[in-house]
Image (cartoon, rainbow, N blue to C red; front, top):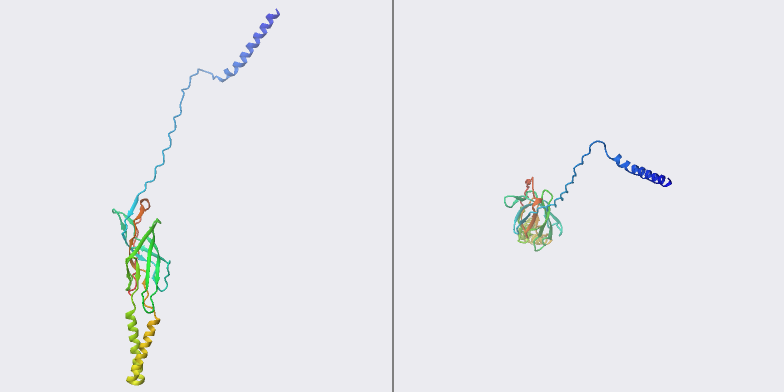
Length: 261
């Protein structure tokens, strides 16, 4: 009897434990007929496309190309010093393949490489300049290697192939100075003491004229504001085509020519 009761008790414990374990499982099952939901697989994300390299269009302007420019600040050997800045702007557009690459109104900056005053007895005033920087109207800036080849300064200055401006000589002016003072001296002497006085006065006037020549410098070399220059590229100039997509191709500014000297 004792063994029968022990077996019965063990069976009841096992049965109770099975019920307690199955209760949470039964609680998790929803009521009603069950259907299995279809298994969905998330699509694999596509890799981001690699960034495309920006296209670079190089525009080459050959050496020897000429540009018409106008001087914005006047230069004179009277006050100019080596290293002084020179400012200009383009007065005519430059095109390539029916496209404007350097518009009117572009800015150029250069510097004086040489400035020499005329001598008191001989020698002429000399200036030499070089253009270093080009700034397009949209702000695009490139290094420039150019020199002027001709200039319209309103005077008698000349320019050589290296961009050196040479002022006019003063011999004619010196002769005129001596002649004027000689005549003036002769006239004063004649009034004072007749013919003899005229001779003495002429001599004195000639000496005075010569002294004036020796103490006075010759004409200064000048490039007044508004002078027109023709500059030439010394080397090939490379431009970034993406930087010259102009919406405004520039407008010519009124040019005030220098006074004829």
